[in-house]
Image (cartoon, rainbow, N blue to C red):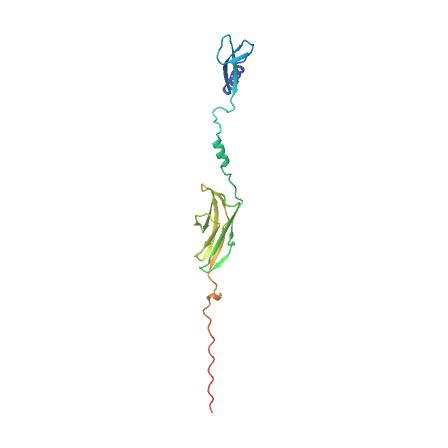
Length: 200
């Protein structure tokens, strides 16, 4: 027989033995006065010894710990991450204009699906955080004159960005001069001149 064939056979046998556990048990058999056969683990007078050899195969691969019920339940209870398909600022409209430094700008945000537990929704005005709370509505006041940009972003629990909205640009402008609000108080028409007395 070739040496490599013998070596292969030995390796297969070793692998089989690694997965198989052999058991050996001794049982004693005897008959009583009525001819009834009895079996026992302990020897009895006139008993015959029987050796039972068996094998059991391990269902778990070596060096692999069986999965406990606790870890399986924890894995089942862990929420599955849900991907966001949309995040948008729907108010104000892109390019909207507001007149006067006392203008109030309402910012409203929506996402699909809605914000998931553990995630955060943050909104920025000109790159500065508006609020560290996860809010879908903000009220902006005291915004300076000029163009401004609003952006929202959703982060997971570790601070990783999941989705970002398109920026919305709005303008704060000076109140037009022809606005009635800029006019002063209404002036009364000048009184008509008093009639001159007639001379006789």
